[in-house]
Length: 480
Image (cartoon, rainbow, N blue to C red; front, top):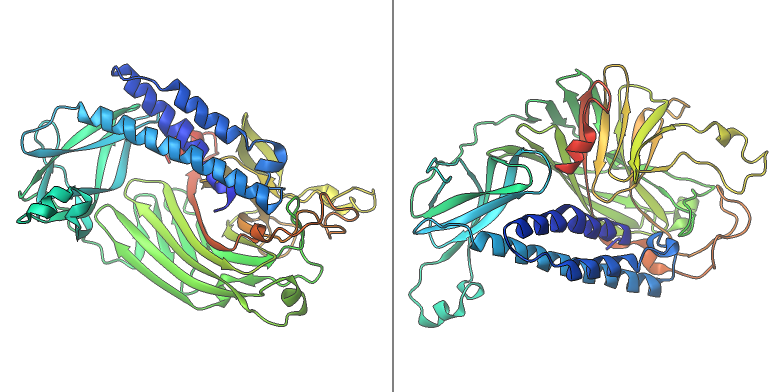
């Protein structure tokens, strides 16, 4: 797993899930486990030396870093489960019913489409609230599971009703910094949501999204009437850099996902629609093969799911990739219908606005700079571009590097380029195109830094009218 992604996952789990959940539990009379939470933080902070969290280390050190995050993640996950069980076990139960609890750990009331899984011993069920009102639900999938996973005593004595696991979807409102409980009554007919749409689009109150034959999206923002075309086109380019810095090859060869065969499908569910885009990008196996343009013997498999939920302004994207190539950088592109001279992004202390094109790029070599001031920027959670009508924001879950580039190869920047991953094979390397001269670190092999294998990236697109302040993007981030 990519170290920076697991770092973001652990940090988010502690800050945005565990700590508010522990605060709710404390108000209900349960113990606030200061010591355990402090231990998680200390384990995570062992990795916060700048080379460690920057992933500028040997493979052996990176393995130690990853193990610390796995330990911190395990502690956080188990304590979250403990608090949820404590709270739910003390909720009043209806006779003959199971409980289904939802927690909202943000400071805003939220109406959300919720996907969850329940396990009951019944081939049908009813779902209702505390007042007895039926709650509409949609069954995505169901399967009979091994009862031994629930209770081995049942298997020993035999003659039991099968356990059925249901993946369900509902749309419900949960109060701010609180929870709500629904009740599951087995063997009763419930208010199942019917699927009516057979559209070839993903559509809700805010967007109409079509999936193009080349695997990209065309997104119409209904509020601003702006159309974003060729969204989610994937770029594969060389990386002749090291663990410190990206640098392209002097003999670059860019490849794009729309040059390869694509499989697409659309599925409409009760409260959301899902588009699935699958492709294999055949790319050069390494830097030598790319520079010689002698073959495409490596590959990146991509399975992209685009989810549009009812009532949501977020277009949620999950990209599952299998990287089997070296020395390259993979980015996803989001073109906009306007040119942007500046881009805004959040950081640890607020928001920062930067130019999309640094004029120093024209003079850095003549003036003897140590490296090029490439306008590849960092974000914490989101970046946004806008014009007088509105704009587009990228909201990410652990992805923290982006650039605004030109779709036409000119100076006019109009396309988000979000880095999904990069792979390099050395800790430090000398005489890079963008950093001539000495290496930044020791030139030792780091094959694990090629990030081969499975990589999962999650982000969302958020169109808005007006400017990013009026769009209240920070509040939307809290509710992701």
